[in-house]
Amino acid sequence: MDNRHVSVKVSRLSKHFQKPGDIKSSKIIALNNVSFEVGFGEMIAITGCSGSGKSTLMNLISGLDTPTSGSVCICGEDISSANPKARARIRNANIGMIFQSYNLISYLTALENTMLPSHYSSLDVDACKRKAKALFNAFGLSHILHHKPDELSGGQQQRVCIIRALINSPKLIIADEPTGALDNKNRDEVMSVLSKLSDEGHAVIIVTHDNEVKALCDRSVELQDGIIVKSEINNPNNHRKKAHVTTSDLRKREVNKVAFQMAFRAVLAKKTQSFLSMLGIIFAIISIILTVSVGEGAKNDILKNIGKISEDTIKVSTSLDGGLKSFDVTDAHELLSIDNIHQSSPVLKMSQNILGKNVDVYGVNEQYFNITKTKLVSGRKISDLHYSESSQVILVSQSFAQANDINLLNHTHNYLKIGKSVFEIIGIVENTNTMFYQQKVIYLPYKSMKKFVMGEAPLNEIIVNVKVKDLLEDSQLKVQHYFEQKYLGKDFIVDSDIEMVRMSLETATRLTVLIISIAFITLTVSGVGIMNVMLSSVNERRPEIGIRLSVGACPSDIMSQFLLESILLSSIGALVGIVSSYFLFMLITLFISQYSIVISYYSIIISSIFSILLGLVFGYLPARKASLLNPSEVLYL
View 1 (cartoon, rainbow, N blue to C red):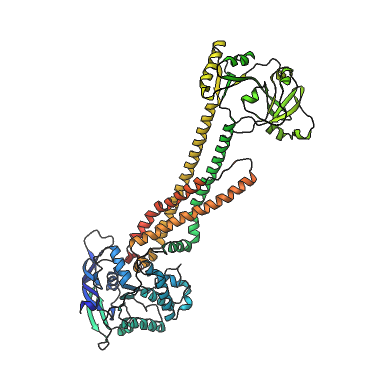
View 2 (cartoon, rainbow, N blue to C red; view 1 turned 180 degrees about the vertical axis):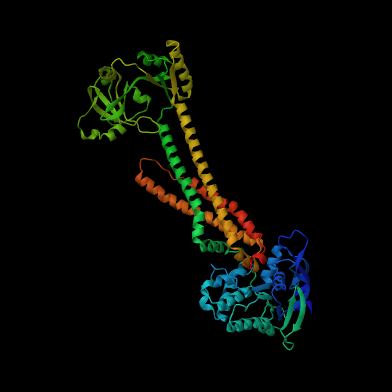
């Protein structure tokens, strides 16, 4: 036969299989030195009993398997020696396959199933969709476009399978027992369609056991034990068109726009399994965003309080471990003679049970509030006269005033009993400079403290500030030298707020890093969960993978499909986690307003990117496993 009119040329084709579990060299010979040709417009039947090699021959012709020796040329291209990608291209462009079991993907509609080959080709998808609808209409199936396979009869599913085989305008149609599962009426309709395709110039190969189907073919080839034992012409007077089928003029190179949609449909097909696989991602994202937000809120609180801490103060206190027990009140005045020391105040401290709660009581002089930068909120300050006359007046912190409903705006006198003496509250000042909680403090003149509350109690603290902050450390050394000279051999403590500022910032940073690390470890573990789900999905969807490969998908297409699904799972999980975090954030701020929480946008961005990378990394192994599957082994599971 003239090669210009040959659609399929099989030359000395052999296929050997190793016996399962046999470590010796014995082999199963499925095909042995088979040769024949099929012309354009010719419809031939491949017959033979079970085990004769029909399915093996069909797999070799379609490029789903490779031969041990020999060759198969499809429209002049050797498909048997091509690499997997090239075989997929030849199959997609030139071969349409029709299966006895229909091999329709269950979660796709009839129209989507027929469009499957076009997604792996360079055809214009919209043009293919118009062609598919026209074919549905021609087959009388326009009413089932959006039906799933389980909603169709056997005859309808077989015709959908035929439309799928025709969608890319192939030159060769391979039909595996296309009428085996049909009644006589549907069988006749299918054979009429195949005969018409042959009349139009398609080469049609039908694998069948049915003698009536065989009789309708132009020629038949009978196999027995992998060898052609008979080749006969059934219709010698039937002259088919021996012309090439016109290929589609709709081909154009473009990115496959439906790949994401196909992955999304696959994820939606098993909603429960997909949701369970996303749970780890969802909880991990919630954990990251909320913990980082809480950490950021705490860090902001620390930084805000650090802003209140005086970076120009030096505090001298007595030692608790058998050292110096008390300072002399004159020390506070003598420190002012040291260079760079600006102000000083003695500080008497004690804890008193006032109004049923423990409260810190401070005895200070008029310079204390300037040194600590504690501002008056309402009322009036303690005057110089109050200090000099040991007046029974006090200032209270905001937190103490709020806790005890003290309000100086109503122009009523407010009194408080400390010990055995009663003091008038004349003002409310800002909360003291504490890092982690709002301290309740009462302030009274130093002399009033000694006279009415503590008596001759030891002076255990002196606080000073400096004129130039940059010379703070030098001034601190001079203050230390002063006390070392005056109190020889006695232990005392000289420190400043600078070290506390450094330590607080370092602690806050370490805490944030620790929280983020734990959360990202959790996210990584959830990625392992996605990998396990995807591996399970590959095993469950082996027949689907075979279908996709049979219509022209190459291994890289299969890998991309499963990688996209994995990335989609992790991305949807991240999105649900972000939305859930927002609502939880709103609930927390609504019911627990005393804690500062700041939405951390960088944690949202980083965790989202990390989730996508997790889908890519942990989806690679399942995707690679899917891409390496042998289509001839998984298609008929």
